[in-house]
Image: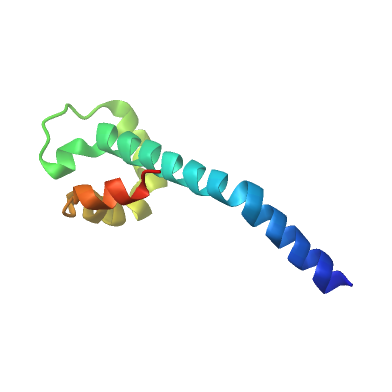
Length: 86
């Protein structure tokens, strides 16, 4: 009986909440990339003055800098964005 309830919960989650969760993750990722770009754009060669707060936040985001740099500098394909649109 529990397996039926578990499968029913998974069905309801997939039917009602999965797409919302995927959308929220994409929005969160966009905000994080924008935040990192504003703080550490000088690492990519964009001339923005480094301020006091970027140095204060640096210890908390040091682990995310390398993946962020790779993600920002990767090639952008418009077809990928169009495939995500409904």
